[in-house]
Length: 255
Image (cartoon, rainbow, N blue to C red; front, side, top):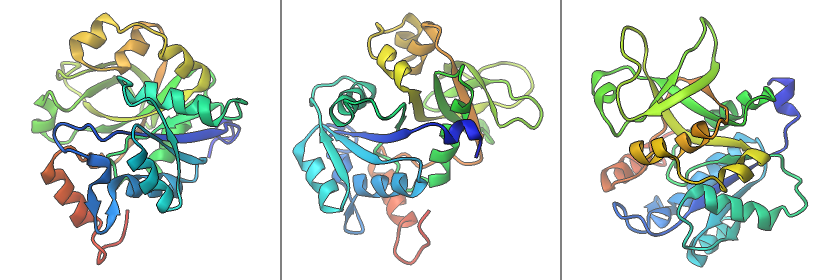
């Protein structure tokens, strides 16, 4: 791993709340006798980038995580975004400011390859980068045209695996010949960047595209993306949950 990455001292925070509309009580959804949030905590722990805490909106989630041996932080249930939730959790668990970077890992990725978490940290080896994230090349026309698949405008030099993200959109951008990239919503913030981000007003383009990361770009913050080879399964619907159960079945090898 890049020496600049080794110099970082990250903490992994997983925001979780019960109020999902498409899949009620999603963090506690059962996957072979284990709540989904616990599977996510396990994947994050396996990444080995730093200590892992679940930032919970409700005590029920915290109890599930702690029963499994994990650590949880209770937060205000009314936070509008996961970024706000992890910011409150960070202040509670680290008032001495030991951690200088924060991995914001979504709590609906129970089959996540831990290597993706490690890849997400690597762009912060460059001190000019405020926030890092992940992208994967789109390999089919359905995803290329699907507004639910967020596209990242990133120009990778030949052979490069890290490049600056210039924009994010639900549209198929940029036009013309060349690859398009699926944005994976896993972020790593420098601590100062997270502290600044949560104070910013919602951006004009953020509201137009319904993409929170555009708030950072509109404010002049730098986001770099690491290129990876797979998009993790995000569990948003009952069908997604069934697929996660298939992938995590006891007779299969865990990711």
